[in-house]
Amino acid sequence: MAGIYIHIPFCRKACHYCNFHFSTSRQRIPEMVRAINKEAEIQRFYLSEKIDTIYFGGGTPSLLSTCEIQSILSVIRSLFTVEEGAEISLEANPDDITEETVAGWKESGINRLSIGIQSFVESDLQWMNRAHTVTQAKAAILLAQKQGITTISIDLIYGTPLLTDAAWKENVTTAISLNIPHLSCYALTVEPRTALAKMIHTKRLPDVDPEKQARHFTLLTEWMAEAGFEHYEISNFALPGFRSKHNSSYWQGKPYLGLGPSAHSFNGKSRQWNIANNSLYLKSIENAAVPFEIELLSEGQQLNEFIMTRLRTMEGIPLKQVTTGWGEGKAMEIIETAQKHILLGHLVHVNDFVKLTGTGQFLADGIAADLFSNETQQTF
Image (cartoon, rainbow, N blue to C red):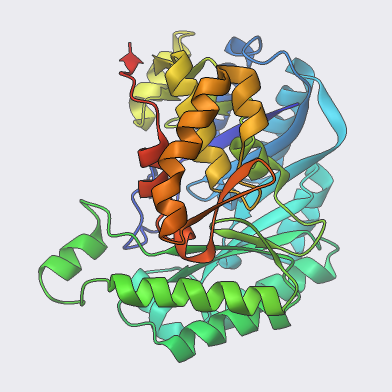
């Protein structure tokens, strides 16, 4: 099985913390939809597997009209074999959710919504420069549920400069009380060249506190476990049966095709990414060429990819698969390198899996890097 990701690079306004590729000018949306459809045709042989997940990300895909969403899905179905009952997700902002839009999304085939809530605290939304209010956020969730979309995920951000422990608990308990079956929760990252970075640099906001972020993460895991959620990936929590199939495919190393400017693709042997420039992307697609860079992955890099993605999951790194794919020696190297992290209480080695402990999850990137095989990358 494989997945398709569609990047819609448009937003109503720029959130202060965001460094994803997007434009606040929406005039070129129709042209972009046509280009994405054309790219799908050009890339129709990239995947040979059946498609079981389709994900509209961005940006703000909920800015598209029903006809535009239907157009993209129709082209994908005409070019690829899409499994009946495939998970088809749409990222949506609360201010775009109305009875009419939800009805149109359902008619198009959307069966899962990922709603960008970020916080149920009004002051948080204001400094983030979000386009919605807390009232709109709650109303949007209830409306989507009433319209029959029950497979809903929401995003929440923790460890922000003004977020207290009490306010963080309010965010999580509100999500649980609204019967949300899936939460994606992220520590605030201060990205260069964002409004947030400038506000912190000019002292308009205090810098993020790593200790507070670690505390918020620990509290989050405790609260979600008490509510019956599986902590199935570092940033993701789901009630049984509600894991994100699309994102799980990333962590399981399944192939996927990315369409649209800045979208990434992966086929197991190479990774490629489209240019993050709307005008250049559109011009290139008009000339029937996909503007991307590609990185060919050596055996060692493929192993590193495997380590990085599997370590993020609750199951951890399956050493039997490492042995099958890269040899027993590589599995032994992982076990040996893991020992110091096991002694520190950040990893465990159980039933032929190496996986993170609760304290290790907040250190995942560094631990993964320590377990990596040293290889140089090839980018063309």
